[in-house]
Length: 289
Image (cartoon, rainbow, N blue to C red):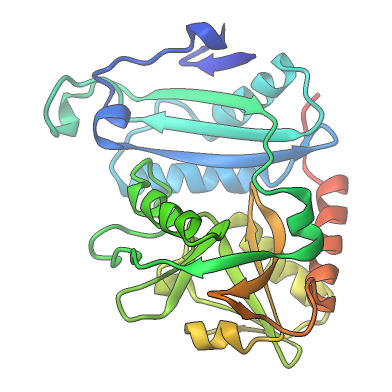
């Protein structure tokens, strides 16, 4: 595997960063996860725009233009001769010795990995999966801005551990007010009486790229949308529920905390959105070649 690292394509065994890198020492950096299908990168520009927005929010000065980063993503995929897969793009604050002071970091570091990924077993897409509510809460926006896709992911990691210990593959995270924010790595949608409902980003959810796509598809499919604060009760009593994310794509939820959701999984709306999403990903995107 070839990794793009600070201007060079290197073998994965040579792709190394300093032990003094602030991304490693303090989780000080930002990242994006992108999908590519049929040698087209899905929503490349949107992902790179969000990367730059996250960097700006944490005062990380990028050394590359948006065009540079897009070009390097495509270059990395070509170097690994992949038709379909996943890209992990990471920008760290760079090396700066010990100590929190980010101004001691002279320049950022960037690496790009292009590989394959299987986040959940295929049967979960056919039959739905069980999720569990996590005790770990999403941080308040005043503590850690949810729109910043940063390397500081311990909050999500600990919630994921709780979900796995509860026998689930994914966990629902609540904010400090007890409203649904998102899952540990995915946005959450539910269907009630033919209406697509999802928490507003102000409740602690990431403004997911796939989330945006689902909202666009809802308009095309003539499905009304409501962004509103949701509780666990709303999920328990929903007709359908599904999760979205760049790595997860669109995956139905069969139960939350042992309560079966709806009458069948996947439900008709979940199937429609999954089919529409897969068709879109196969026919659009930035060409790799």
